[in-house]
View 1 (cartoon, helix red, strand yellow):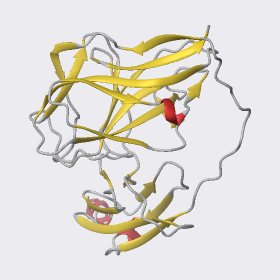
View 2 (cartoon, rainbow, N blue to C red):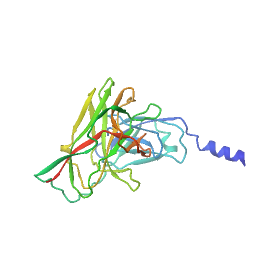
View 3 (cartoon, rainbow, N blue to C red):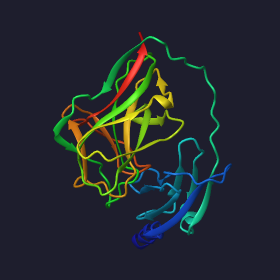
View 4 (cartoon, rainbow, N blue to C red):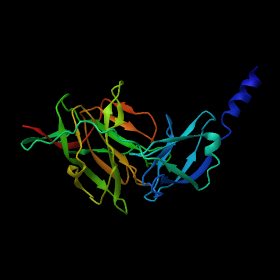
Length: 276
């Protein structure tokens, strides 16, 4: 019986240490889709494609029951079995555009009040950084809850955070994600319909990202999340200010589970406006 169990366990890991490559395209336009999330759901194995849709991923410790997920904001996701995924060699993958249900149009009032949600006091004595696995930082995220009042319709005007140290040779690449709260109190569905990708060359100081052109509004609480899109962004190269006032939330790969850190905060905030 023991030898049978050993054989079963070994058969589950026949795909360990597989490298796959591919490129992701828009099914309608045939144009490459930049910054596509690629990884294994529930595991710290993932990456993000480059600006031209190209990706390469190392699949370590995977089992036959795992599946490779490919996802991009504004598109329908695709999943592949490990048997299929291990055959990828410069595979061309096509994603169909997601249909958008048009709801009630929310008109921004002419007279508004401006406020900042999140942590607006930058503590430069506390260094925070992205937490990658095996020196892989693409797709890693860090988030805090904005704490918007339920039922208050707000428009997002600007994202703000503070970089304490930036020793990257090139500009730092980020993606802003805004999530609804799920049943477990963790980041859930992304409320964005278009990706918000930006770069920063700030070495020490406040980073501001104008959000007005995206016309983002919500009447519920939401999470402010920064996603790392740079190849190398460990704590020795880039840190941002943090806080002793938690909680903060972290995701160590594109489709890994969110982890809550009660005793740690992040100095992310958004400038909002709402009806006077």
